[in-house]
Image (cartoon, rainbow, N blue to C red; front, side):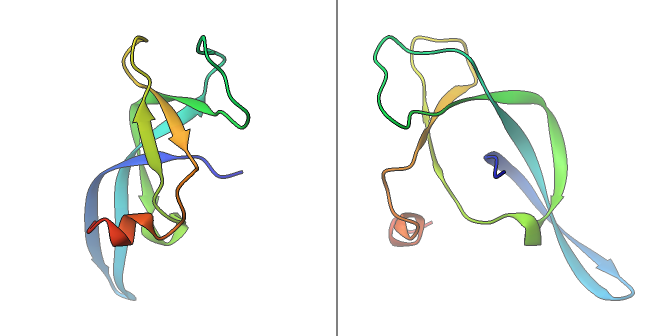
Length: 92
């Protein structure tokens, strides 16, 4: 199953086999919290406190996370209503 992460830093490590790209990320986990207004397909995530190192080849694509206002810090909605190339067109 795919899980969203927030990219914090990128590293390039030189090894005897060549460069390896590694990302420092904050993981997200599903939360049982529900907003007052719910909609079909709604997914809410909560940011984990710890950071992880992930090899860049395992990151699939970018997603748009929207802050869930009026709740505790770190809760965000996964916005899946934009297409996969939106981040490219937005100049990122």
